[in-house]
Image 1 (cartoon, helix red, strand yellow):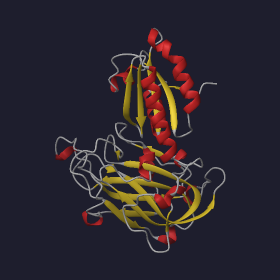
Image 2 (tube, rainbow, N blue to C red):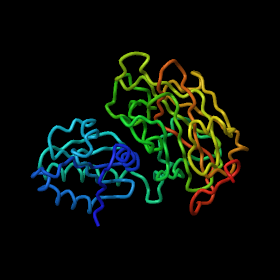
Image 3 (tube, rainbow, N blue to C red):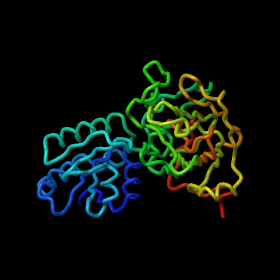
Image 4 (cartoon, helix red, strand yellow):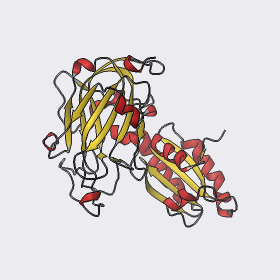
Length: 333
């Protein structure tokens, strides 16, 4: 059975991009001779190199999915485009088998070496970039995030997917000295809101946690692409947290539900070097947490969008959960 995913809509494609570290896409048409010639090669690569949540092969029929083809400026076929963390990084045009095989195998190997563990987390949290101090007596529990079931609402698909927020590597907008770059790095490894400044993030965990602190990194103004000040994404200002929800919340629904904690950040909360805010939670309210919903209500400024580069979960990990998240607390029937 083929492992290649046939894309049936723009929303379907965005979902695939956000659920796999590497996505390889074959832009083709049924009437295209070179496309047919490359099809067996592509299927063989898909069969050999597909990895759940790491490497996904897709096909986009440009006649049926014209909006996707237009978005990525597909002008000739076959065109093979490789995405990393939802952003295109490599393009191979024409029936160039050698170039396609080389590009795909290189990125597939990279995904295996620095990607998520088979259990659904992001490897060893002890080796992760933090952006802030680790509270005494607690650990970096970010690797307990169930990355397969993360959900993110109102994110701009032009930027990275939700998994980027929990990756162990340092944001590309930080230089080798750990300070924010003044010029664009070229890699959009961060999340930006879409239609307005609000963002809804559902974070399920593989084990129950005692959450002591959140580290939230936001590096607006370092992308080098904004035309004027009004278009520079803002840092989060007001954040509402909801513990132990069985699923994500709708924006209107969240306004009517009492949060577990409300956080208000100001300019002084952000570290001037790493762009990270240390948010200490009311520990007694986050003692046995199986999931967390983070609702970014607004940003700090007059802009229209909010940017987040990384999130770290600091606390204690309990026993690994089995099965789906059960409804708890106010979410219970």
